[in-house]
Picture (cartoon, rainbow, N blue to C red):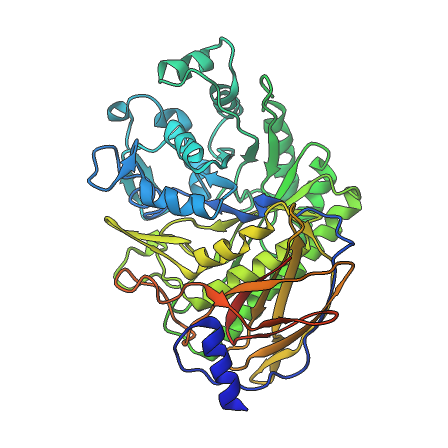
Length: 515
């Protein structure tokens, strides 16, 4: 039996590698109520974050117009092409902690005349300021995504933030609109998402929630809607389980904010550990920590419900992801880390959680897009590699703006060292064409997991899928071996009289499509 199952997994995922496979503990019984969906999974849950940090902007996105690396107006073509493929819906910029030290007027006009700035938050390096407002908006246009700008509340003024909105979005005649035209942009941009400060409880000012609520209300008053542009105002929300911050912000400012940010990193701050040199103990610890996102989302949502029962205000998880020790030999302030199969599971679990709570979670931005923390893309000079996390976004893009399907699920368990977590993590949706997509994560690195699914309210005649896995826990893509971890066709799913059955390979992410 052991040999039969092992052969099945190898054939189904078309992968080579050694793994210990056996019957999983418990059953994974799933009911998908395909005719009961009401909530839409906002595409903005699949957003990204780009900060002036390490090599995210300079080298990762911006190489300059005269670079030998193929570019369009200084922006890397290969990175843009890869991100367009996964349809990123929004991009947060310029930070992060950097945002509350960034003065936007220093980043406009002729590049050779822009003042250099010191990145005091990340490595103390000097930047030439060549990537500013016009370059970021050009990037968003190339990506066909919405800009999410985080304004400087910590060290900036109300006037400075108001003028930035005017510079970007006013089509009439005014000093700021005329300045934009003088800098080469006649037509105003449209900017919907606007963050009023970042981590105001920490690097953004070390404020108390009561104080920040007052400051937020003051700043947001002057974020005017010019013409047809409408600003969606996002407040700096809680860090992890700071539930009192959410309570105060919703009580004091809930009527004037559109979204409340939440930041949570899968990290052990006392011992971050290596991104690639780890064992099953660290695998288990990381995934267990990741699963706590569900509790955070639910408890913050409950507090928000108290003040906003109609769920008008969105919970915006605009910083999340893994955080390990930097790669040996790299600048510790640049937060450059590799990205393994473990990170793919972290990404898939979080996205499933956000999908399943889309009635309140309206946006999420993984940290960060290129070369920093849980990056989708790594670059090195002219080379680019897609990480396992990137491939999860590729698999999961089918959920964007789809209808969440309610599920009843009894998962089996993954046990390690007398601790247990659910072995399988799931979300399901129906797109505008009527196709059903089910994304499943098998957290168990040693066992396959059979899943028995009952589909209610729909008949299907075809099932197909793709699978992301590898032979080793720490499998990852490098510039020399860029395809060590990538999705392949998945064939181990069978229609039944009432739904379907599947056997999910160990340590894998599977996306199934039914029509």
